[in-house]
Length: 519
Image 1: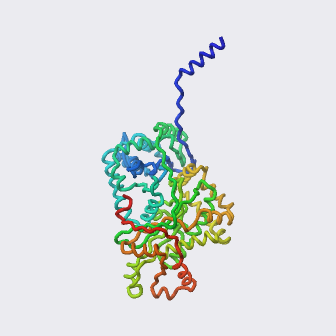
Image 2: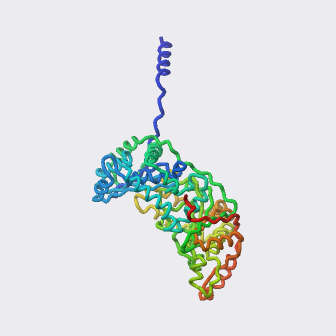
Image 3: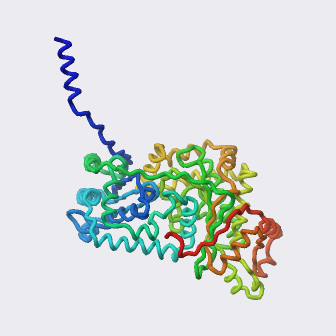
């Protein structure tokens, strides 16, 4: 009888359909702040512009914008604005290469009224033709016009990524390229929404003084999202062979904006990233006047507005004094940003008697100076005194990164992406334990000046002379007005001579017309 029962049970199990594995639930990151009057909700999906289908570059960005700029099944976008205005609530979307983050902020007293809007935007967006056409037109205008006209600094940064990540899904701007945006249809948006934003690639972030019941309801509602089938393509970047320069020529550029970079094998996920942060801060902390690049190029020689270095992507550097969360990436690079320096045409007009025969402006000198400073760090390392001062500064400065609940929560979500619990908290301990030897080892391991990609956005009058100087490694003396030159300290004059003759390992120089970028 026992054998019969066992056999019967076996036959029943064999006949029953196999149980399907449960879909992975959304991760949850909570930041309880009992004294806060605000509630912040972040919905971070592990899909960004790297998930754009080929030929549809810009789709992830447009989809995210349509979600937050459109309406819901119950409310039009106009009704939503009217409803939220008295609450002073706000929300928006930010798309990077590998992640897209939706952020909602509201006063705790209005949470119950606000939540249906949040839920509706994420679960039942309307995706109207009118909203689609309006946002697509804005996006195309940015890709074709605004990026070329508004900021040569940002232009050079995006052009560098185009060169550095060429042939990969990281290559195009998050807003896409001209052909890609033009080809996007409303059906493309609807399909991307269904494939990219799922409970299995979602991290829910909560900050503030929110009820426990709200947290549970949010998690329950987000569990009704479909299962995402898209994953961002993480590129394997080809290392440059020598210094490869692309000069983007545009009419009426006021200066030469230089952006240079090369792949590195570290991110916030690795412990040596903290060591490289110290070196980077010493060389050129963003928007700080004590960095070596700033001191040598701007303070000493008054060549431009600012000169900085980076060891990861820095979002909207012209607007942000501090790093912002939401740009977590698994493929990384180091870079140097030289904000526009004067071109020969401008210097000739300014000093017709003294510089009337000038052929090329300050770009090659500024670039050589930046490379010489980085090269010196690689060869000689930091001094004990500079290490201690810079580390002390960073231990205070990095505490400012999370100045708002939204930024604190954003960095917590970034931490989860990189496999860390709380990067900002861990960072202070990492910095405290660092030694000078740790930093100098990180410099030697990750930095070099012989192989890198360089983009220079400049005036069409400057492009060819600049290309000749770089291609032929022609010495590039610094051009001063007579009154300035006569007042220079001897040590600056001596350094200028060394910089002018500093050899660059330039292997290729290509001139690109501005009309041919981001196509």
